[in-house]
Length: 472
Ligand SMILES: Cc1cc2nc3c(=O)[nH]c(=O)nc-3n(C[C@H](O)[C@H](O)[C@H](O)COP(=O)(O)OP(=O)(O)OC[C@H]3O[C@@H](n4cnc5c(N)ncnc54)[C@H](O)[C@@H]3O)c2cc1C
Image 1 (tube, helix red, strand yellow):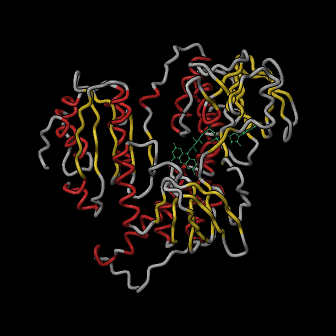
Image 2 (image 1 turned 45 degrees about the vertical axis):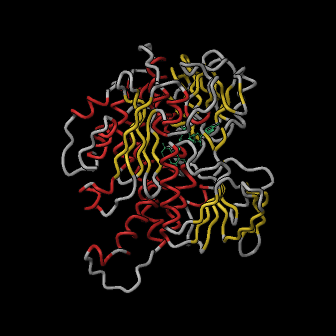
Image 3 (image 1 turned 90 degrees about the horizontal axis):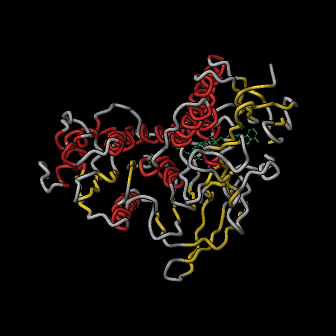
């Protein structure tokens, strides 16, 4: 293997591996340094894929538990879960996908350099363990070292009783009870998984509502559904201590009204966010400016050190709040690789990044929430359509939730689409195209939506924005 490349990528997550493939497609010689024994980073190994596999098992269990409604002749009084089969199916899916990246690397002639990468001065990456050597990047080094679960002051994550998502995806047994700190995407997805698997679930959120980045109406609907499913929801509540014992964890918390609360559970899942991975990277020595541990980049992903760029979970802009999403890291990787190869740089519009949360009911959203649109001074028009009256939703037996469109009254432009309910994580793709093409509500109304589909809820929400929903 030669040690000189056009591009050296550190990290093989969805940011790094996609940047590498795009660079190779454009004729650049490319290496990826990855220290984990597998390619694919968080998303494939510990994030998106394993959690969605577990959620699919939860969905299968839901159908089986409702066997009478579905007319299934399962022939067993109690429907259970074989966790070893659940885990082995999940692991098989993960293995297939990570193996797929190895195949794509070979196909695109990308070298996987095994070990930890350290920035070693201009154009150089030192491998500090594994294949000990120094690589040269003639054009650019891409840092895509991602993120890891963030700890919380005064709470010791022992990975047995007090765990992170890394442990939660691999549990061999379903806990009788679990408390979950944090109600972002990771927290609410695990709440849905464990509740359906049979655990007593308590979700504790410091802010006044669940999924705080979503539109307020979505948060309210999720809270209503979670309570109906028997999930205990404590919003506006701060965990003040967590002590792990032989049989479980004892938590002390303070509610918004200043009342003390005690919660006991077999496990505590800390899902309060993820922090950047830069330890041992030598970023500061290489002249890379950092902010709160994140790598600062400009609008074209350049760091402050010449020849070093960064994408994905590890980056921050001048304006804080870079979303940590697999598809965003990939889009950044593609835009960056194209810039390095001398193509036109196609900037990402961060107001048009879709977000999906695969809890039950699912959430999909893109663009401005109603509150944000008002805060930006738009004269806002809103249209809401509930899944409950939709034929396809009734057929699926999933009638909770709605689609909400936020539009600008002046030009009729769609500013945001927020949905909670069946297939929302798929339906949001249509809304994303609509925002990308600066679609008006009228154009969405005139776009014919097939029947019977869940997508009719999007069309009906557009009608509702003009005050003329057909079916409500
Ligand atoms: C439980 C969970 C569920 C999630 N679900 C979703 C979802 O459904 N949809 C979604 O869009 N996002 C989801 N995410 C977020 C998504 O996984 C991340 O946004 C995405 O993986 C970020 O990609 P990345 O390339 O920036 O970093 P990562 O995927 O974190 O990859 C970084 C890689 O760099 C390697 N590395 C780090 N430092 C070095 C070094 N010095 N040398 C060599 N290698 C190094 C690491 O081993 C790792 O493989 C989820 C995350 C979690 C935790």
